[in-house]
Structure formats: C-alpha cells, structure tokens
Image (cartoon, one colour):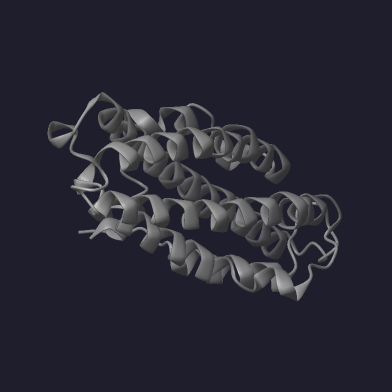
Length: 216
C-alpha cells in the first residue's frame, strides 16, 4: 500500500512544482544529477540528525507507554545508515559516471548495475514500516508538540524521497533513454557525446522496473 503511494510519481501536486518548473527532460544529465544532489541529497542529510533528535526525545518521554516509538527510532536509524551509504555511492560513482557517459560515451563498470534496484525497493519497504509505526503520520494523535513535529518531519522526509525517486527514475532515466533513442535514430556511433552504452541502458531498465509508477 505504502509503496504504491510512493510510486504514483506522475500525479503532480504542489510538492512536485519545483521539479515541474524546470523541463528536466531537456536538461543535461549533469545538470539533473547536480540538482538531485543539491536539493534532495543535501536535504536528506539536513533532515537525518533533526529527525533522530526528535525521535530520541519522544522515546525518552513516551517510550515506556508506547513501545512502537522505540521500534520507530530503530527503524529510522537503520534506514538512515542505508541511505547515507546509497547517497554516497550515487555521488562518488554513479553520477560522475553518468556525466562521463553523456560527454564521451565511455564504458560503464558493470558493477554499477548491481544493487540499485534492490536498494530502491528496500527503501520503499522501510518507508512503509516507518509510516505504520508512526500511525500514518496522523498529527491528530500526537502525544505532545515534539511528537507532532516528529510526525510532520517524517511525512516531509517521505515526500522528499518520493520526489527524488521520481526525478531519478522518471526524468533522469527517461532522459538517458531519449539519448539512446536519438543515437539509434541518427545512426551515431556509441562514442557520440549524447549516447549511452548498452550496459548503461540495461542498468536503467533494471532500476526503472523497481519503481515503475502504478496506474489505476
């Protein structure tokens, strides 16, 4: 249920306007990668310690009567650790390689394909656990003002991850696919500046299957 909500990425609302204001389909891969890092990666890194501090306070005050709060704290800390590793890999390996691919058509390490689909699916599952443990982020059931702030921050945290996945899978990946399509249509060689090797196309296909939007 939760992953289905996260995967409805083409239902554009107010929270998606920042992305929709820019026609990212016409942007370079380098520009889009820089945007994802500056807006989403850096935003998550700012949110991690703030949410963890709120969780620690809420657990200290209400944990004895509400053991699910301790589980929520543990689940968030585990997700934070996994996401920090994932963001680091994207910034130091995946995004630089994609930029190089766009510029030169250089070969991509096959190891880049491994793990991204699994990690995105795992993140979706972890967000589902957080939402259940946090009572669907219903501030009407907040135990105190700190708990209310925590619920609001967790809901915003989920929304930002939703937007990040949308931009990576439904804009960045589509942009890469368009480059491949243009190359095939014009008969340009694999080393052209706006082409992608087939190994990168395979990675794109694998990742997009993990977060394809559901309709109906």
